[in-house]
Image 1 (cartoon, rainbow, N blue to C red):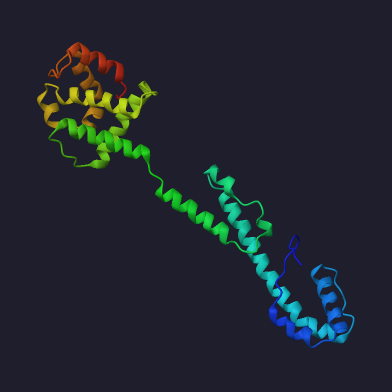
Image 2: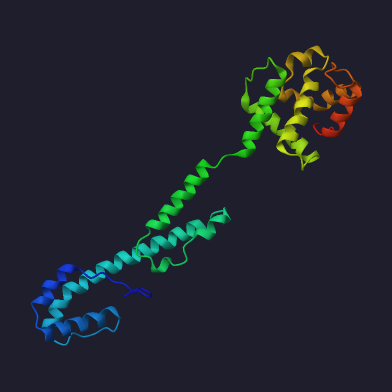
Length: 240
């Protein structure tokens, strides 16, 4: 029998074999049975015991093959999960797989992990979408044509702000960007006014910040000095 395998399957229909025997014959058969499953390599004490035990032995061998196949599958499942990059999954690996006769639990765990990964929300992507929506709101008459391009630009602008203020909350970040977008939209330059977008802010970042610093934007509740100070503090010239 396999190492560490302490359980076997006993079939109900074996009773017909034992019922046809005398107590002495049944005793010899059952003693031979237990010697066999404990790997003592017994020799049948007589021809009758040998004949009656043969179908029982074949059933035990079939069950052993099934058991070994399941153990191999469990081992492969553990290796797959161990090699995953997400180390939080290691805590969920069962430590007693060598005693497991079925791998249903392991398969269910893997399915749950996959489902969890599929349903896990992407908070970073959601926040970038909020930045894009904030610009559209402040612009008032802006229509996004290439969302991927605008999201990439929003991501770059957000990256600059987070480097400057890593401790800022989401609300503080959005409020700071709101004020900056207002100043960009109100710049008194005909081309920039007609074409202002998140991607334009990125591609002409230094030019726009110089305009704001020099005070050539429309007033919107803040002085030009305030605009220049806020822009310089929040967005140093980083895009070349």
